[in-house]
Image (cartoon, rainbow, N blue to C red; front, side, top):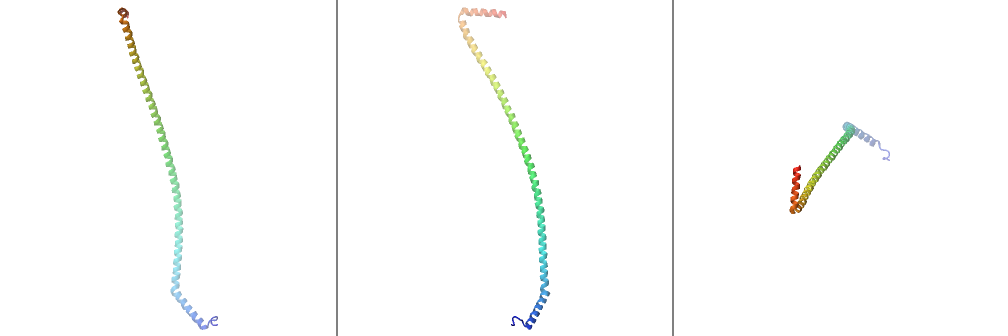
Length: 164
């Protein structure tokens, strides 16, 4: 039964050893343990504050990023708008130049056609004149081969000359 009911001596020595242990722990260990717990509590509070600051900074950075993103989108839209205007102007100028070049080519072709037409008319007139002279030559040879007839033609021509 000693195990169920401890003896007075054993209880005394247990209380005495617990008191000494409690005194030693209070004197030497309690303050460092409390100090360490306080430091840990301060470190946790500091970490929580740092995390809150980081969260606030992240929120600020995200809002700044959103503002920058909006600004970048606006700049992109402006640049795209300017690029479209430049493209339209380039296309318009190219179209105008093409029309001017086409008109110039048409005018040049008309001029060339006119000059070639005039050249063809001139060549045709020259050819007609040559043919006329050849025909007249052949007729005159025929007419002048007969001596009497040739003298009659000369007399008629002299009379015409006198009249003019």
